[in-house]
Amino acid sequence: MFFIRSRTTSLSSIVSIHARSTFGGLTTEVYMMYRNPSGTTTDRTIVVKDSLGKGEFVRLLEAIRGANPNIKIDADLFPKSYRDALHSTA
Image (cartoon, rainbow, N blue to C red; front, side, top):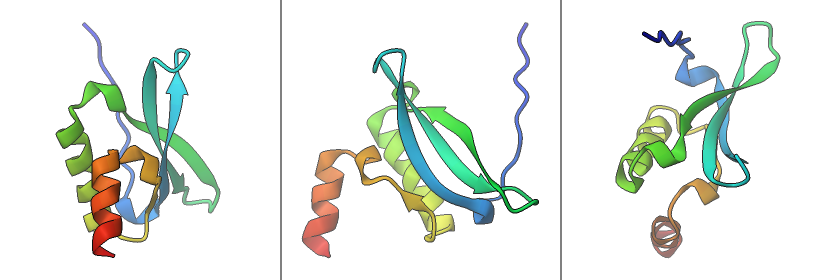
């Protein structure tokens, strides 16, 4: 039996969301940079991108952005078709 300890981070303390390839590019871990109560920034893994379907992953990012539009999310995390649609409406 495995127990995974989770920590809660307020959306208001998240500064940015970015990705890093792991295992030689086989998977992509999505990280958030957040501000600690001490004022320093720290990275923490949110999810392994490949563990979610494309639609689920985009909905996750949209929900995060909807809750805090000040969070900088790397455009490369969104599918190309989604990025193209954003640029055509802007």
